Amino acid sequence: MSSDAPVAEIPGDTRRDRIVDDLRGHLGASLVDSLVKPGDDVWVRVEASAWRRAGEILRHEMGFDYFCFLSAIDWLPSPYGKGEDDPTEPPPERDDTIRQGYAGGQTRLQLLARVVSSTDHIGVNVKCDVADADPSVESWIPVYAGANWHERETHEMFGIGFTGHPDLRNMYLPTEFEGHPLRKDFPLLARMVKPWPGIVDVEPLPGGGDDEEGEGE
Image 1: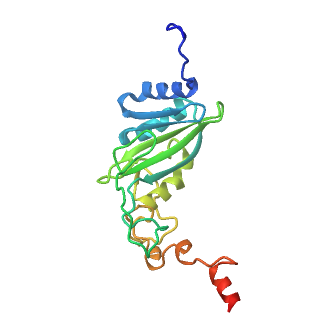
Image 2 (image 1 turned 135 degrees about the vertical axis):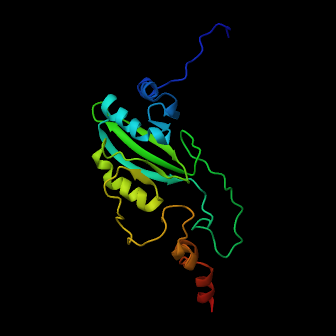
Image 3 (image 1 turned 180 degrees about the vertical axis):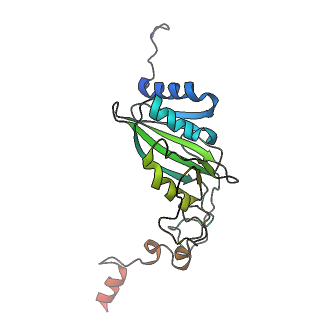
């Protein structure tokens, strides 16, 4: 083969790459990391201090006019193990390394929101790290009004505050409830009292060994 043969180029995604470049042009170093999966999707991670600003830019400067959802992720491996673990067996060795997924991260708690351009039919996933010591960011309600109950739910379930939100009352739990049930270190007492039923409530299949022994008696 000739040494000067053309080298095949790895296919990219110009549209999604341009989104990242445009957002970085507005946010500068506040856009911490990004990931583009060609032909699939795009993730960007911004500093918590730039969370509201990122939403404003996406909405007003870049045309992402449709708000899909906002929630949080706790990347901490559960200290209580998995519900699928067999309680009759010794606990397996666990890897307690925190891995934050696409576009990386520095903290166990991250916010995740998705917005879409109704014109270009393309979306962006926006993440930011939320510090344990001060789990709060500015509310997206002035930018996307639909973020209202998403932020309320995230506050209730993860304990993340949203500065400027007009009403962060609980939606599901009693007002006096303590703790945040979707944090990995929140003890799910129902699972401690009775393990996952897929482990303990196993019935023998028809024609199994017990049935065959019974038929022979």
